[in-house]
Image (tube, rainbow, N blue to C red):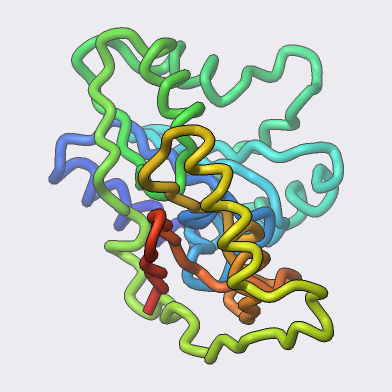
Amino acid sequence: MIKQRLAVLRSLMEARGVDACLVPTSDFHGSEYVAPYFKCRKFISGFTGSAGTAIITKKEACLWTDGRYFVQAARELEGTEFILMRMGEPDVPTVEEYLKSHLTAGQSLAFDGRVVSSAMGEKLENDLEGVNLVYDCDLVGDIWEDRPALTSKPAWILEEKWTGESASSKLARVRAKMEEAGANVHVLTSLDDIVWMLNLRGDDVPCNPVVLSYLVLTIDGGTLYVMD
């Protein structure tokens, strides 16, 4: 099954002029645990651990993970074509080193920029001189026909008797700091910060009572954007 998925992915890569595809383990907020919708790396590799990065080129497929998962990854990747890259072991290149040695100027690296941090994006841009970074496509998602939907479970407000402070009080304190800093708008993407500030709770991310959302806070108002 994994070999078939790789073949389909490579056909799509060929059609779109992509030489390598980077598939991390993340969601739009860099969460440690991700909901089923975001498990593209698991789908394309078969590796079920919570941490890992896959790279697929036209001729090779590799999976990086740390020492917690060496035994598990070796077992799950057996017979899939994926090469296990044991992070931190001698002579094992980092993701960036591997890409630098396998891509040349004029070639393309594709990834879903929504699940790659700006820090990693900047590092890739600096390390892969002359390589075209295609950051606005989700190639694995495009071939994942039965991809799970984003969660639709309702969020809820946690009572003040449990939080110890009302959301309006927290917002007032943040706005006071905004005024001190001369800021008119404060944008929050950290899920922990958002649910803390609004006394909001949800079930969108495994093991974390958060809601997939973004908050744009102004001095006299604000907008909460919730994934649907």
